[in-house]
Image (cartoon, rainbow, N blue to C red; front, side, top):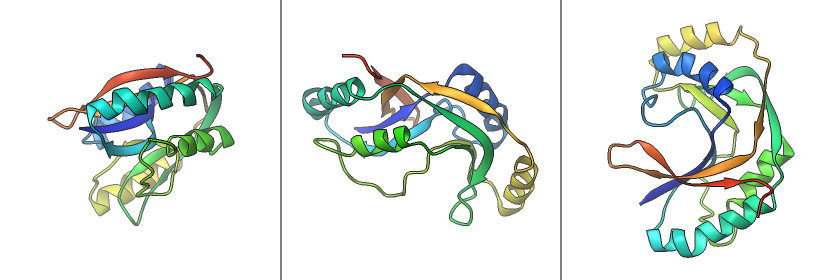
Length: 171
């Protein structure tokens, strides 16, 4: 089965992201706005239960809650026509990402870790330049806190569902 690990932001941040995602993100119905802290990976359920969940509990216990800011949009252009809310890089979020690639957890990284919340993807070139040009003029001043992360699994229809939630700083 396919799994991933993400942080779901507060309702306030999700509302901002969804105001754009409804129109510009074809994955809008498949998963709420999120920060991917570990790319999707394949694992057997027994491996999840016996190895990965205990490690995730340990990582969560040893990671203190932290905050982050969002001040602008950015994009992955020219690689893809994806637009995102840029999560300001912090030592805490990079440490969490690194820890999620240790021990029994798959270490495969297809992409450099860029903390973000996708708000538009799979746009045509013309639509991308129009939307990005418009959104890049917007200034955001959003502060949010991370107190947990979620282990997700992918359903047959492509949607993602929470398998388990891990609270930061708690045993």
